[in-house]
Image (cartoon, rainbow, N blue to C red; front, side, top):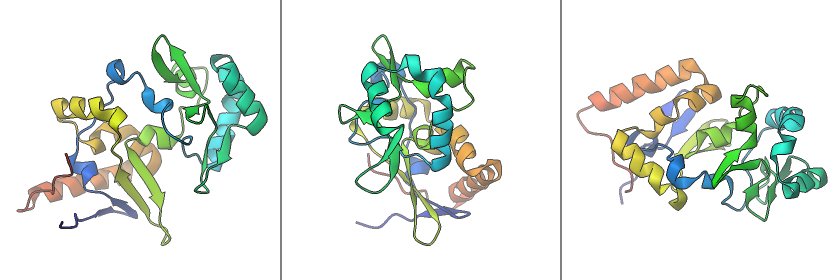
Length: 204
């Protein structure tokens, strides 16, 4: 199989799937299941841990008793088996900051921010999903499109709306890399689209 080319924007390498694949969260169907599935918490930075700890008093009553006990015992984050800092989890999979509105799973941090009770939205790794970020040994950042069965409805909705991943994630990409970088990404996409050979299609 022919290797798909990697796109570079500044010091960031992007999988071409981020440009060619479509995605748009469909909360009515998925119910926010990404907050309660997986085998580790969401990747966080030291700065984000500080922001989360500063928000604890605001979100505390929105958390389950099990989550509160886990935070009391372990803190808001831990180091996973890969050596990464991630948010604490309960039941081996549920993020401690999950709260519920009927059948829907919500992020207590995001809920508080949207209600004006806190200034911290949520870890940028959560906001960037389905993009996964990796720091390379040469100092560059690699962004990859992550396929997950629980997000199949988001793929369907994204295709219906013709909304590529990089456009769906405009705000979190700007939050992570800045307005100037995102403008460079837009110009790169335009240049690639104008090229005689079409962008390679990612896996279906």
